[in-house]
Length: 283
Image (cartoon, rainbow, N blue to C red; front, side, top):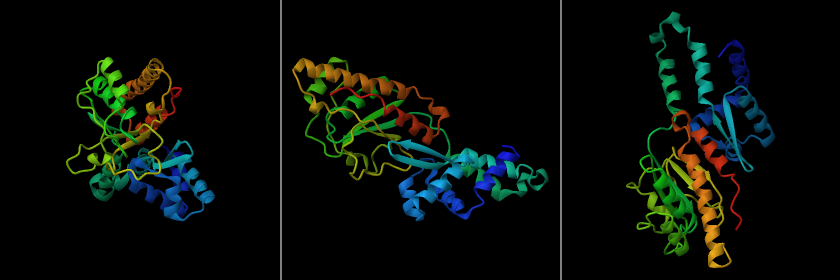
């Protein structure tokens, strides 16, 4: 960061409303906050809020992510960290031990933006947990074995997975011995595995109160056609199932090959949201 960039940051922060917005977003970490919720919490009119958010983003202190009609704002911790580093690098005549308070602050900011690495737990959600989420769970456990552990659940699970889906998975070489439909509540107990990613595969869970899966989880929505609505002959339905399988498989192939070591959580969410815009199967 140079003098000009630092001056732009300070200019953006020279208005008390923007300082308040920044402080509020710092609390949310890299997950950020939707514009509507930000407006609700601050009480700032939408047009005025947009003006302040744009100023902070232009200065490199915020970043926005758009999904459909919803925009989420989050602090660019690397920008904030660069600003603090710039103004303190010559502090105390080169004796950083005299700047203990600032030195302790910088690691806190660094910690919030750590890239995700290692192995991951992924939960696929669908209303009935009978088809799409079952397919995604089976595929990821096969192609991501060793680095990913997949689970599936539903908001209103049926008694058993779709028989045609299970038969198709078995024909494609997947182990279906443990496949079952279950409620997402099974993943909210203290003994439940901690999820790194939660991916919804249908639109119908919108409007329902989704359980809390932790403040570090990365969420995404990949709307896909419902096999329960596939019509036609058995052969025609099998073709549609194979197309759906291929679509989920392609997305998961991209997913497992993302550069997890160099992306923070917000960047990963952006990439997952982009996958959600892939062309759907014609149902």
